[in-house]
Image 1 (cartoon, rainbow, N blue to C red):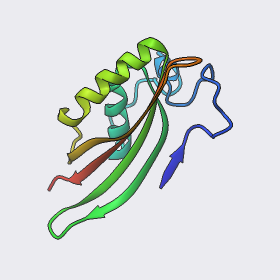
Image 2 (cartoon, helix red, strand yellow):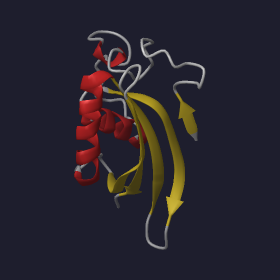
Image 3 (cartoon, one colour):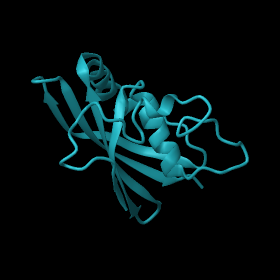
Image 4 (cartoon, rainbow, N blue to C red):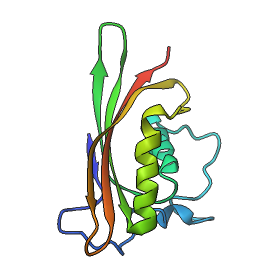
Length: 143
């Protein structure tokens, strides 16, 4: 399953996407609103939340793809996540994200992040500094 939060014709950096830092800042409504503790969250949503937190509030979710994965002894899902970092501060946060992702210890109940790697980085400095980071994460069911 793949979700694209921007289209190729939508390149305006001023637009607010669903998972952009601005959308997550709502204190009482919307995406950033507090969740009821008795509603379970899917591991994919927990993973996206953890990755966006690791991005330090500067990363905007562009796309997320999830595919089933299995070996002889393990099963889980492989996730491809694309983030956009805008501006000088965003690019600096993107650099920190690149350095910290491979060694980050994710805490997702019932799941284990077995592998987290950056697969592609596109860094553009003109007309506005932007960094697009694509990363692959392997999420295994912790039994």
